[in-house]
View 1 (spheres, one colour):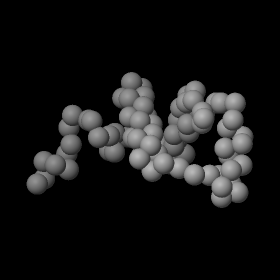
View 2 (view 1 turned 90 degrees about the vertical axis):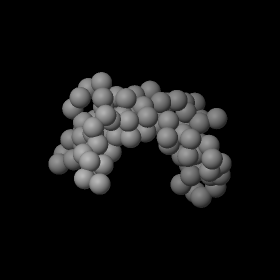
View 3 (view 1 turned 45 degrees about the horizontal axis):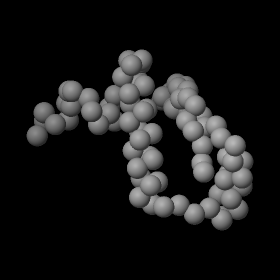
View 4 (view 1 turned 180 degrees about the vertical axis):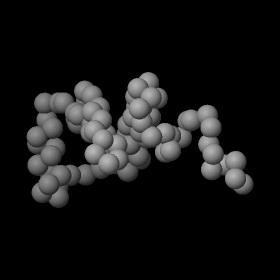
Amino acid sequence: MGGDLSGIRFRANGRQIATFHFIGPELHSHDKAYINGHALVNPVQFREALNHLRDILFKNLRQNQNGDMRYDRKRDHRAYQERR
């Protein structure tokens, strides 16, 4: 059920945008169910999946070192905390 993450593509047009690319045999039917309002979601699994995607995203950004790390939860230096 669902799909697999096959890659992340980065694009910068004023601000950096990440696009997640998923593959899977049933993605089209899941997409139709979502568009038609018939899709169901387990909120706990959905939150875990979003956290997992965020971790993958920031790992990829750290490896490429061309991303804005302002929203990275695991970065070493957090300037906004020093002001407190």
